Length: 402
Image 1: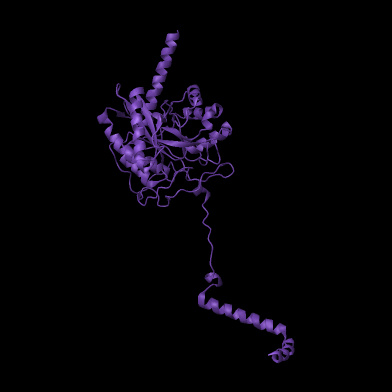
Image 2 (image 1 turned 135 degrees about the vertical axis):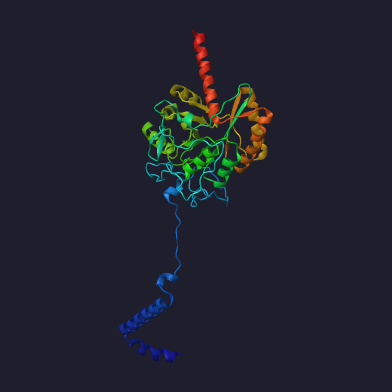
């Protein structure tokens, strides 16, 4: 073996390395050509990596805190592309990352699409001429030339009978999850008010569907909570630190996402609602556009009443959140407390989220109210009644003082 190695070394040194390299390169090229002939492109056999990064529009379609409702059944009135899973949380600074959601409040069904179901409780089609103007995302609500307000023409008409306790329910967080949204629209009585997430795809279709079943609707305005932006209500959140002009810009984008709502309600907002200076121009905008405002009652803020009275806003506060605990026992307990409040104060407003258990318990509970001697009224009717009572009390105090 050693003799062979010694004999081989002189021969190896005599090899023409340039020719050897050339022959090797030609050989490799020939192998590549054979591979292409047999298998197609060279990279066809190589593993590929694909990054599925959500688009900005996708990331804006959900507000923080919404959970997944993994329903498989879908409504054919809603676009097939609407996903069921929660996406990324909202963007903290829309001025740096503008959201390009398409305006959808002027959408109408085409001839090939199914028509909205008819109901004897159906509310009028929207938008109504004379009650809107162009906005950044569609149309904005306005008071008509005759002085009529969207809070009146878009609400469900209801006459409250005196001497009978009134209860009212609003179910929020609607539009993002198809199955629970359809359940709320179809299974709850038309006197139940529904509120929708402004980032909802096909928002106007959902609004139209709810109104076709007789439900008056509200939209939810994201407001700054304590802990923002770690706790983020989503794009275009109204901020206590923003200028009046900036909050107005954000608000008009939110309000122009759809039409047919009689009022708005807050989504979060513990920090914003503590600032009278930040609230004043926002409430002024609500009042100027003829909208009602309902506060969810999560925290009691004297600033809300102070600013609402100063700006002349028609508003009220929900008395109880009925599903902080999502169990049948806990929800039933809250509903019993709501009944007691209605007897004590004459009226009570309950706020719930679109959990399946909430909708189920509300369906059974609302069916029992008439037999128990209660009136189930839309939220708009209770807001109107409460504001009239405040005005009447104020007028009595003025007369007594004089």
